[in-house]
Amino acid sequence: MKYDNEMTLQIASKSQNEAFARVAVAAFVSQLNPTVSEIADIKTAVSEAVTNAIIHGYDQKEDIVEVFCGYCGDIVYIEVRDNGRGIEDIMQARQPLYTSKPEMERSGMGFTVMETFMDELNVESQLGIGTKVRMTKKIKCDSDL
Amino acid sequence: MKMKFQKKELTLIVSISAEVDHHIAEECREKIEKELDKFQGKSIIFDFSDVTFMDSSGIGMVIGRYKYTLAQGGRTAIVCRNEKVKQIFQLSALFQLIPCYDTIGEALKYTNQEGFLNEI
Image (cartoon, rainbow over all chains, first blue to last red; front, side, top):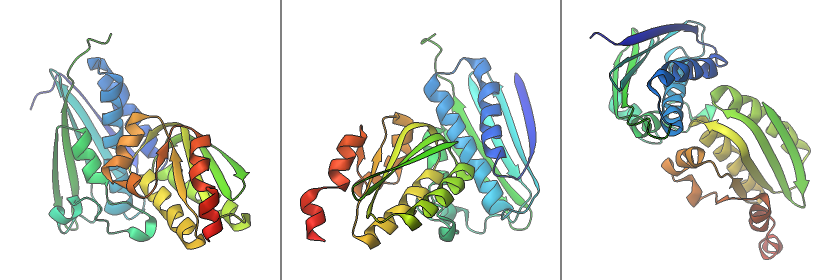
């Protein structure tokens, strides 16, 4: 697919980079004049996906998380990729309140938040290879400018 | 990230000024746990008035402390007016267990409720 514009970030899987990743994506997407609410939705979804990669994908070991963001017209495409352990049962992982790490006080709401705040969510994963979380969102208007 | 702790009767008020994600939630949790160790009360108010962003990590942080107040026979309340932050809590139906108020004053009425404390 050819995007009007795109960027890819490679960040160390450190929890302090979660804020950096969502702010960088928000800054990039701001080129489309999204509303404050749309930006908040995108920041939240990116935060969830990057956190999952760090906590679950890499089990907090240091590695690289890739965050791609592109847009075509008014549709934003975001992909968060890791080369971590992978998800055994994606259906189960996407269930609200399901978490494999209750001891870490994870709520099991990550995928539910991504689904709610974005228009589409697609999760691909292979055990031992890694996980790709792809999300899209249509930026509806800039009429509040 | 800034945190402020205040004690009002049997309630610990935890005011957080930050974007609450996994990284910040872990920091907050450690600081709250330390504060709870020396705290003689039963209830907690999470004051999210200055929380500008929160992801689902905030849910875990609140539920973890809610369990503590349950064990103490106390209550937990949230103070929040940010619609996006509220939406995250609503997705997990958290407000059924932990009510959300606009002001600390209203939340304190719930956590320090006289009749309620006498019952314990």
